Image (cartoon, rainbow, N blue to C red; front, side, top):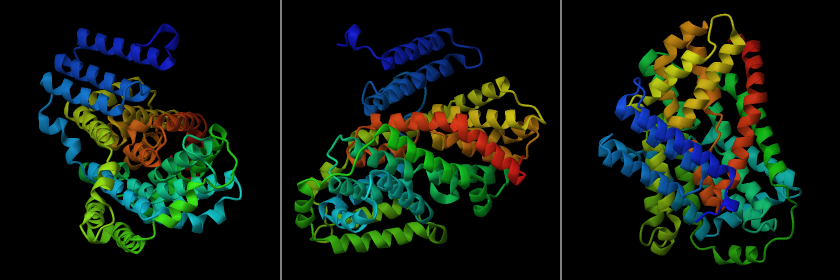
Length: 463
């Protein structure tokens, strides 16, 4: 029971969301209809619960499932479609790979190699981990895969720096790796799921093909490099720390886990090779990860024991991610996404010749859509509107499509992007800490980086 003195801003925000959702469900706006109004109310409540984190994420997902099913708003296959998503299976395989790295002490071994280069100072450590994550974005197409490799190493380095669980230094390392393994990859075409959804939708619906080089040139200087530098500064400001003496458990852990490291290294190298060459063989990165998990779990061959497997899988996180994926599917199937986009388009100042206002408006459109549909679903909602938006703004269809990236790469809450949640879970640190970073980074992006991006596009002659 929460007393009056324990109420926080989050409680008031959630209460406001509940009131709005109740009003929408009761009033039933004509444009939505009764079913659409109830669906929107359920979506708003779910988003409010995820954003405020006043209840566990898995509880909000379960509430979403049961509300949609009991009300008969969507069929069970659609509601539970998240469990069939490749993203969930990539997360499961990521947990197994992470457990193998930890069980064999490979994280400590790799940390011992990397630590001397990075641990001379805390800013150097944060900057170095961000740079390593950015480089990995060009080599591995999966944000979860990058987190699986980097987070265990980062936590082992945290031990070597004397950063205990819950300390600023350890939280800072976890946060920069979560951000670094995901955010810069929005500016690299094949490096994460939302980019590929956008590219696939543009090709299927509009017949437009993206160029890897043009996409990189347009987005990476600001969304990749500048934003990564800003993210490092935000982490250093929010979680200041100084490198100290290694924790007492570090040496013991390194000695305890030598058996099986060779197997894990070989399996990881083969997995990385297949991840890096996915454009050649066409095998989904999730199925590659799943094959690696099978090898690591196989009796007599693998290194992850049944007890270790049970400890490595966070079923609550899987429910949360499945709920986030289901929410995007429900918003699309119910038509709410298109109606949201149409409503925002009707109120935004879009007109030919006003390039700055158009750029900021289209970015805001994508940003808000990503909050309601989750980021992977945003391109599927907005891409069909490209022709109308091009007419309203005077932009080319390609320019309209590219503004989506600026918007959906601006992440306000971690629930919008599953790999952020997975990375923090792998680190063992609370997701609340990452919220401070994403909110701060989103505000800086909207106020400072989006105008810089606009000027960059102007300089390139895109607007």
